Length: 259
Image (cartoon, rainbow, N blue to C red):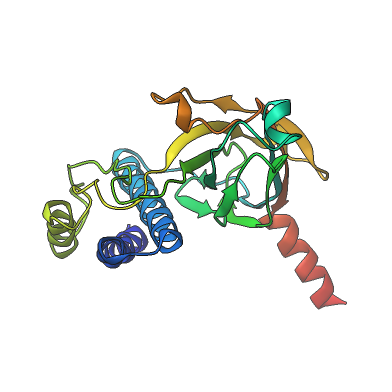
């Protein structure tokens, strides 16, 4: 549990610095990047807290060989109207988009793609997301977030999901830090700072989706309260999900050493 406490402490520091930066940001691009960082940090904290609770409830059995996962070639087709894309008129909206991928306690974020407008036929992420300790029954949750760009981003907000309860396994010092962060007027309770990213689509990938080449997968689209903020996604996307069992990697290393 000590490793998770260290990670929680790091995320607290990141959020403290990022919230102060958001309050001082004057340039829209800086505010978007800072809001993305804060959102990613919040999601990591949610995962760490859940894992702490899970470890306290039962001891996880890890007899199976873990694996390294690689997620690459992420591409999301867009569905603009013909008049919007080909005649360059109609839909004026522009978006900033990024993804979060979660496996166990590992939360990885892609780069921020902006602006995404009617001239784009798809959103392609150049990132290679690597996870180091996936179990054979792993579930990778991929989340797509978007923010509709506006002239004045100061009234937008960054979502907050942190649970208020602290797990008993967290040290007192770390618990006090986390409590102070939650109560800080510049901390997580102030959700009126910076741009607001909406969760627009999700998908869960597992061992059956692992393949050597790029494959198409179904995408679950979220219904936003404000349809104007809805990113025009299709209900599918493309990616490559690769896996390398750790035991196989060790065997290959041993074979090379013996030779």
